[in-house]
Image 1: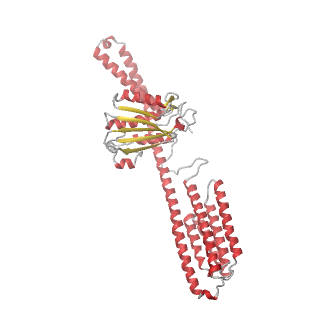
Image 2 (image 1 turned 90 degrees about the horizontal axis):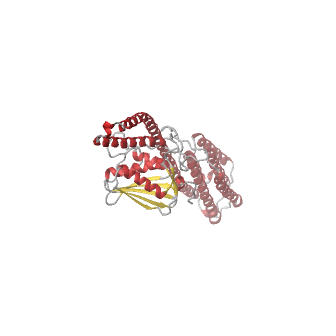
Image 3 (image 1 turned 135 degrees about the vertical axis):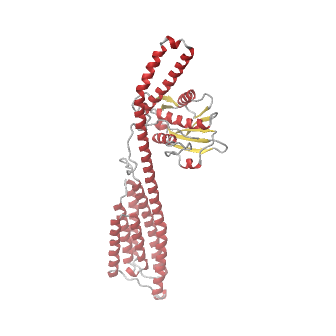
Length: 463
């Protein structure tokens, strides 16, 4: 299935579907995408995911501290201040509950919020170390976990601020802490401390690998989303430029087409021409071709929003399919297109000119490689109208399927080709839908357009 490049732009008619754009907005391809007011940016979503990871790490710390205190106090018999240490654990639990409630009503998570969360974790760790031996406690290595997380999550200034807090806490612990007294039967204190250091190192390494890996995954997802937004902005820039060129060309063509129409009308009234049967047939064919050109020019202007009310009108799903099929058959082939309406209930929708042009584009692509059979299947999937166009051509090359909907992806080998499906993708996306393509098992290809009924409805609720 190959692609052609008709003129498709945004529609600005009185019957424009709900959810469609009414104007073209130029977005420079190199600019950062700007989120509308009230929406979250990729950075906001990433920081929210990272804050959730800090909360999960805090739950891990709560469980780990409970297990460690129980082991040291009950198994080794070391006299620990269980009540104050339990109060610190309860403080971490309360902090986590408050953080979850705060995130539910917080629109965006900032770098400052992450810094405060990490500082509170450092304070809790310092309190527990103060109550259990200070810097001699082998779990002081967990400070490195906080510093590493800060280096990954925070900006440079905040990272150094966290380092300063950790360094201050360690210096304070060297001067003030409650000693950890081990019972005599526990063995050599040095061996116990070495074993504790090994355990602390292992715990530190595992937590670093688990949480830093997940943080990096969040960052990769953010970068991929930003790349997608930049690609979308570049595609919108292509759309705007082509729309402007098409609109300008339509205006320029309007005058000579009108002149040709006047001349043909004059010739129609000349006996020398009308009495000649062959010339009369030629004149009729010229008038038909002229009307076709004028219809194309009008369609371009309607799509660009310069001929309000001429391009869209209320209809139903069945009427829309019948009118679309009849118009395509009259212009291309009477026997090629087979329409199957499996939609079910005939719902009222808007006959949108840009959507019709997009479907024509896919049908034209199929017709170029499958002259004798094309199927247009209409189905309903939930609250979506699904249009599937199948052909019996050679199918899509694998590299084109991987780059579906991107500009200049064509198997025709023409310079500047490959804009047809790119335009279709953008039209469908502006209506809130999606486009996919696949090669059929035996022969041919299928392009599927999924369109939300809510954007095509006329005051209807399809919930």
